[in-house]
Amino acid sequence: MPSDLPDAAREETKAGAAAFGKYYYEALGEASHTGETSSVKQLDAKDCNVCSTAVNNIDKEHAKGWSRSMNPYTVSRVKAVERPDTGYKVSMEVKVAAHKRVDKDGKENGNVKAINYTLTEHVIWQDGRWQMLDWIVT
Image (cartoon, rainbow, N blue to C red; front, side, top):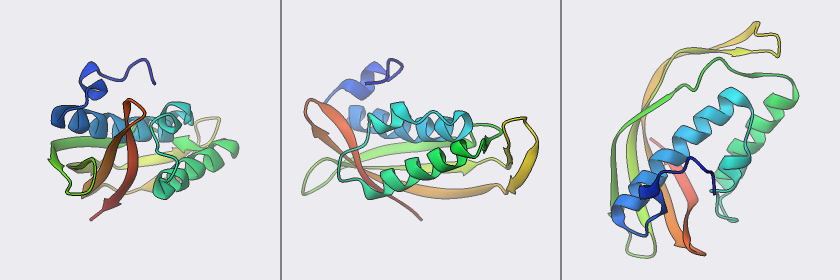
């Protein structure tokens, strides 16, 4: 697990699920900025297709020498609700700041407009830790 994963996100509790969900999405934003996806990959469940797609897109951009000029995500209003099947539904408000896509020399090669949305994640406790199983943006 990533060394900076908060202690709360290591607990099999409702608060732990919420802390994990928040950490995951902030880590995904940081990966889009740095191009380093290994910590996010440690958090994904094997069956998380949306996770794989997001990580693969970051890896493809990084292979081209591209990244985001900053971690664009700010999350708030994080809450967890137990699901009837397994795990928790973690929802949060996400503000994506206007930012640039830059090349390896820091030159701008794309603009991303600011946007706000609700993110809903499905997190599960498996193999002694939280894992991201799915998410949807609305």
